[in-house]
Structures are given as structure tokens and as C-alpha cells.
Length: 456
Ligand code: SF4
Figure (cartoon, rainbow, N blue to C red):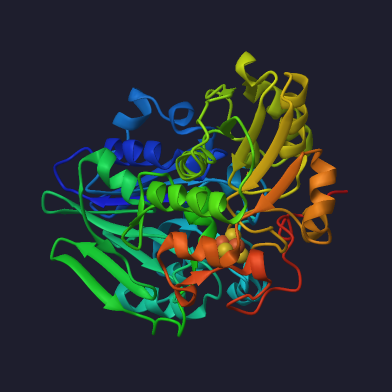
């Protein structure tokens, strides 16, 4: 999970535009943030661990001048949470220097690292993409497609090199990437909500396999790779990751999530007095469940919004601690039969703690409804779900999961129900963590820290 942003806008403050673009993409990664600018071909990057407003201030932004900029918010999927893995990364190659931000995860990163044949500064899989472009002695419009052809897996990428902005998507289109315009100036972003925030008009989605280059001659689009026979936009973006005000393939995410809740109410009704969301990602589905079931919607659980998302903090210790800091039930749940709606259950620890918190607050019954099917298999394409052995549903029945989380009842939306709510055909989406049917080959060793130096 990462957010990427890019802009070419001579005469505008491109670093500030990127800063605001990244602010809109903060939900996609909270471990590190960075911006790189190109001024007459000279690249400067500033990146650090932390949230966007922790990394940048007025002074640092005013030092980033140029006509082009890219930005990145990171949540680690390959490579640990370390400064060297913060992006945009700068790679000085034989032919050129490349600044690059990557959302997604490559499945052939190990092969490519071996092929690049030199030590890399980071342990992420993203630097190999930069190295392939930086070492290629052909013009940029040939070097980038050549690099794209070597990548397997998920890559929505923004980059700067040779005084040009480039942006591309892998042939499956796992991760979103959109193109917009600020006046006549091109803007690219992971999600359309970032275009809205900087005042840019949505133009279109960048197509799977498409390369967009922006320079003083305008915006050039090349279908660098044949799109894969089937699309594979991540279905997790629809029910969890993307911001509700984002449009994915023309579908507003909030509306899709409300439909998931309506469908869930039809598939798995509950006799109850209140419908509560697990804020914020469960909220639209809870609205849909309440609307379709006629059971009143209640905030029920108050969230401290200044605590980062529990899902996004990788260490188990932090996650356990995070839940207590994050939610507090209202007195109105006391004596009530409540339906709790959330978007997914991965490990089950968060749901178990919330159920127990609601019973402690006096709830008479706690019915858990989930707007995704059971998550049973890992993601190799950029969402750090968990290893299969940590996934509670990987080897347990729904009844066993219910017992483990301590709920009165538990039901998940069906895969067909989820699919219908997205209004996208199955052939357009990746659903591998729900079905174990991966659209690409998957790596034998997909451990997140596989490129870290061994510790003594
Ligand atoms: S495996 Fe799951 S999380 Fe990963 S890209 Fe596919 S649908 Fe998304």
C-alpha cells in the first residue's frame, strides 16, 4: 500500500502541489513520505519516516523548486520501515539519474535484483525499477517501456528523469493510477481524491500497460505493454483501501461500500436494535446495512482519529496497544442487540477486542457482519495482509472464527455479492486473497524483509 503523485507545472509551486496531493493519499501509507523535484533536469529529493506533515514544513517545501515533482507515501510491503526505503528514491545509473515512486509489489524482484548486478541502496523492490531505467542507454521513451516489460507483479509508478515526468501501470492494472489536469498541466495520482484536493480535473485512468510521459512538448501516451487478457484491479481497494470519495473504474468507492452493506443485510440479516460501524472503513457498509434492514444506525464506537489505522502498523505489539487507544463505546450500546459492520477480518485480533469491548459496555448481543468474504491467502501485489498462517479464516470455518472472536453471530458477504457491489466484472478484478486464484505466478519467497542484510 502506497500513494503516488506526480505533476508537471512550470511556473507553479510543484512541491506544494505534491504536498497537498500526498495529504489526500496519506491513508495509503503512513510510514514515510517524500517529494522529489526536477529543476532544469537537476533532481532533488526530500524523504523521511513519518506522516506527510511530519516530514515537510514551510522551509523544507520552499527549498524544493522545479517544474516537475513526484511524491510518495509509503507502507512497506517489500523492505522494512527504514529511511533507506522511503521514497521517492534516487538512483544514479550509468546513463541517467532517476527519481521514482512505486505503489505495488513485484513478484520477480529477486530475479531482477540479481540481474541488475550491483548493490542497491534500499532493500525495497522499487529500486530495481529505477536501476533498470537509469542504466539503459536508450532514450527515456524506450528505456521505460523496456523496464516495464521486465516487471512481473504490481507497479503503478511515477518517475522523473531527463527533465521529464513519467508514469505507468503494469499490464494487469493491480493498483489504480489516474491522470488529471490542472489547467493545462498534467497531474497523476494513485486516486482521484488527490486530484480533487489540488483542484485538478479528472481526465482518465491510466490504462494497464500504458506509459504517460510529460515534457515541454506536452503529454505523450504510449501503450507500452499489451494489457493482460484479464484485468486485475485489486478488489481490496473497493472494500478497504481506497478513500470513499475516490472513483475506481468510474465507480465511487463510497457507493460501492454502501451497496456491500445492503447486500450483506439481504444475505445475512440479524435481529438487532442498532447497527454500528467500525469506523472509518466499515462506515459506508454499515450505512447500507442499516438502510436495507431498517435497523437504526448508531455511531456506537467513537474513534480517536488522531491514532493511525491499526491495520497500517506492522508490529503486533503496536496493534494490540492501538485498539485500546483507538475506540471507545458509547453508553447507548448497553442492553442493546448490536450489529457491528466492518470491511474485513484478517488476523481477527482487532475484531475480537472490539466484540469484547462491546460486551464489557453492556451490549446484550454482538452480531458481526463483514463486507468482504473471508481473507484466506496472502497478497503478493502490494497489500501487507499477513502470512497465511496468521489469517484466522485460512484454516477455520465461519463458526470457528465466530467462536474465536466471541461474537453472537458472524457472517461475511458472498464473493458474488461483493462483486456485484463493485459493478465491475470478475474478469476486471484481482480477488486472489479471497479465492487463492492468482493472476500471475507467485514468488516462492515473498517475505517482506527478504532483501534486508542478515543481522549478526
Ligand atoms: S491478492 Fe487481494 S489484496 Fe492483493 S491485489 Fe489481489 S485482491 Fe488485492
